[in-house]
Image (cartoon, rainbow, N blue to C red; front, top):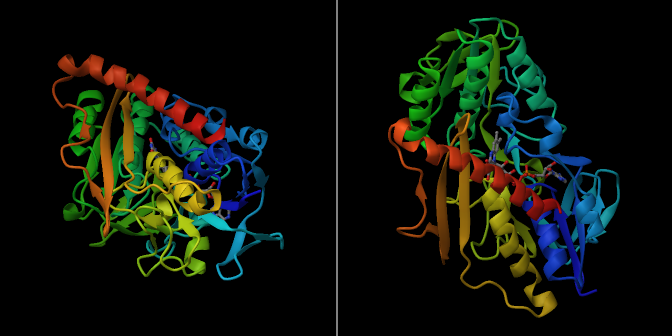
Length: 401
Ligand code: FAD
């Protein structure tokens, strides 16, 4: 073979990279390290809350990658030695690499909200990582068990975090469920920001579909939750206001996953600086970090971006080894669909290029779904729901088939 590509993390970035490498560089040996036996997507996880999907529909097998010749190792990367060019696994095995792609996603800042640790997440779920699916399942069970007229509280972090529109799609899908099953219930959304992605579109949807069920509390109205009391089911704000909730969904502030922080690849922001054309890290040659773990603003931390950038990272990493051209002027894409309700979706699109200093949004590209009265836009919103479903099917095929 021409050389060994090792990939850490079998999610949006890593699975895409593995499949793309096998198809386009068959002379390269590809190993994918992932601790979970299957991958449960965060995208479409909110639709489980809304009752529009069930867990098996968002669970994906690694068999398709195995059939393409990817060596899938079910283990966790414990350490990276960029000098010896090895990855140590939790099981004790050590894998050598010529090029390493790392796409481990996010970790939580467990110290950021007082009282919110891994044990507290069993009572106030975050449901912000796929894992074994237990978090999203727990949140769905709690929603179903909520008393009539109860309060669903959600605590939303400041920037940057995984999936900027994700919390607001979640609010919408919870409201969709409650409207049918618990119509006097309330959603209290506490935000550590004063504005959010697709805000006008979401707030239009909430008003049109759910009346006054949803109350969004921004930072400037004391929206930042700084402490939780899981036993008494309380959210406590910056200024000491206590809010009782029946179900509490806490999305904690985030950073890159531990494997890139513990190995010195991340800087003091907790995220990993990378070269915009190759995703190689400044800290270690031949190590490329893609997906949510890196710093690529203004690109959002999305599955779409992880997929789009994975291909460029592979082409850059494998160019010398395979005698192929490295991408010199790459273009990155993002489309984030959000489900507001039944047959009611909208999207934001971004196109990005690189400069010597980093990433820039291409002027006059991209855009956002139109706003206006539902009477005029119903067909548009319905069509976008179909586009969203098609996006989900095609991106997961581009990762796992
Ligand atoms: P992941 O996809 O999370 O993959 C990381 C993988 O690495 C995991 O499988 C993990 O187990 C593994 N891993 C971690 N540490 C190690 C280690 N030490 N060794 C080996 N493996 C390891 N994006 C969109 O584009 N569209 C959407 O509609 C959308 N909706 C979303 C809705 C919600 C509710 C949420 C939470 C997110 C949503 N996203 C969406 C964002 C998307 O999920 C992430 O941006 C995407 O998963 C990032 O890809 P990644 O490869 O960085 O991380």
